[in-house]
Image 1 (cartoon, rainbow, N blue to C red):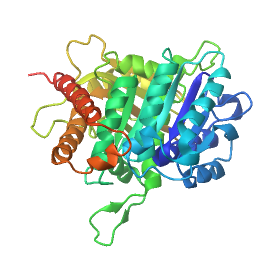
Image 2 (cartoon, rainbow, N blue to C red; image 1 turned 180 degrees about the horizontal axis):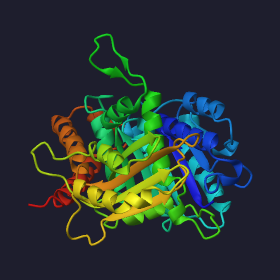
Image 3 (tube, rainbow, N blue to C red; image 1 turned 135 degrees about the horizontal axis):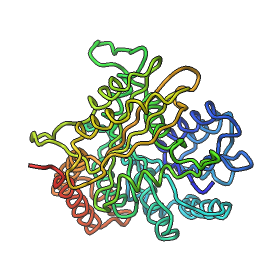
Image 4 (cartoon, rainbow, N blue to C red; image 1 turned 120 degrees about the vertical axis):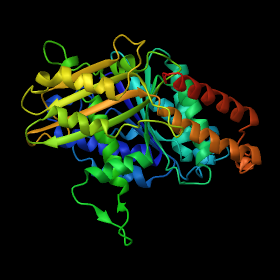
Amino acid sequence: MSLIWLQVGQCGNQIGQEWWQILANSVAETERHPYFSRDGSINAICVDSETKVIRRLRQQVKKGYFRDANIIVGRRGRGNNWAYGYRDTGMGADQSLLERTMESFRREVERRDCYSGTVILHSLCGGTGSGLGSHLCQEIRDSYPAGHLLSVTAAPHETGDTPLQHYNSLLCLSYLQRYCDGVLLFSNDDVMKRAASTAEKKTFSSSGLQPVVSLTAMNAHIASCLAGLLYPVYSLKTRSMVSMGLEPWELIRSLCPMPSMKFLHTAQVCRRGTAFWDKVTSSVVQTVPRANPQGQLHHSASVLAVARNSQDYSFLLSRDSVLMKLKQSYRCVAWNPSPIHCWTDPQNILDPSCHSHSLTVCANHSSAADLVSGIVGKARTMYDSGAYLHWYRRYGCEDEDFQVAFHTLDCVVDEYNSLRQP
């Protein structure tokens, strides 16, 4: 019980809601370790500057409950402004939002025999998720430097969610690069495509051209990927079959050995019936970006595959061929002698009620450079024209903050571009 989940902002708490519903609805009381405490409380702190999402979350999670002291709520939002969320000043009663969160965090750490790390759920776009989320990453790293820090973050739609999304994403990503050990980065555009493709029934808009995908379906897809990767697996359990909760930290160790590259791409396929793992693998690799806009092929520094199969170990019969196909499709770099890692479990948390199987693949993939460079380019265009900068300066965000962010992410893009082989 050494892991703490920190849900920040509307997006973070909505993803957390779907995550806890998967665990509460699918996991027996005796198997909830390490995500529930001994008293049945959920190992999570929920933070938002507004009340509506957290109120709904508490009502819908029926099995298991949150500690009242771990529900941190403000009185008004942060205006989709990173600086407003980060500085957290001039807001009267809300002024202690950061301090209240860190105080609850300290108490959660003290409840544990050994604190190992934190998983933070948030977005790049909103003021609370990006700004307060950045500040919390900084505070946790400074206060608990020995603990791991894994970010699960949603990037906004490329076409635009708010006028300030590029600035917010730029500044937040630079903080994640500086203070986190790994970042599971989900693009809203990619998540929407995956949610639409896996829906049993697609609802089309009045034009009949595009499927309408609900926000709940998108959050459920992200939560499903988290469950596929982070729910305890047989491969990491003790001989007595007790889970130590090592999955998030082993994921970081396997996929983020280099501190300059820590943005991870995730793909997942779930099926019912007889497991044909070669077909499942083919479905997974079809969703992987092949090349950047300039036509240069993407490569991976390392790849983790998590196979879950209800009632049997059939994956082991196909393991070698599946891993070879993943190594080729993800174009693993030649300089890594062991680029592929594999975990297995004979239980499928994603669909435990029937004979089912799932394959979740997470990779340190150079496609991250495309997303990051797109954000940097659009933010730089706005910055050079002086657009909206006064909204950030009024909360203490200076030109130096932007310049440091630009430099940090430019270095990230250069590192990922270096993975591409001639």
